[in-house]
Length: 193
Image (cartoon, rainbow, N blue to C red; front, side, top):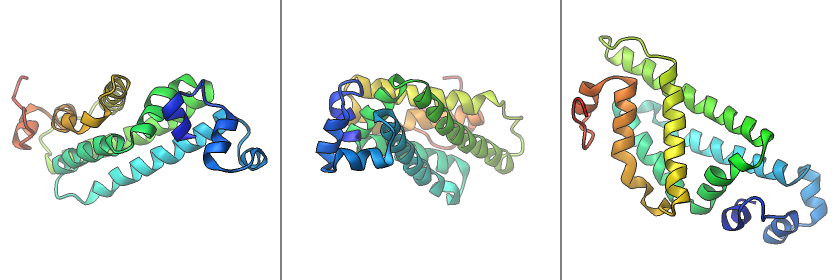
């Protein structure tokens, strides 16, 4: 499914395309999935869970800014190394309809929780930081996802990791402050930038 959607787009992909690519029967497809959307949503669920699992492994990093920096690198590298999946998930998923949007919202919630945990960890490691607004994790998820989707739509998937430092800088500034970003040694970090 991801191969077909990544290559041809969701609308142009058909169940016969998917079963031919997967080398399974149409009956086998319908044993597992109600329709094309059901299959696509299931594979997007799996994709998101794999990515989130890789990012959650960073909880053992020595400090939260290192976890954020490495997380930005891993997140971007994950999409960069999977251009077909990137196109299918980031570009086509929003076009599938209400079921897909509900699925994406579930994934966004998991990523918001991850950023909220980083914000809490920042406050444990830096007790002088003020309270974290509930809006910050939401902004980070939407902004980073849309930025990456924009790069994929523009055909720049192979250059996604070039954005690692800037995304880490943005996240550290929003989760903490400019001084923390500067101390973290994120390239390009300047107070007031």
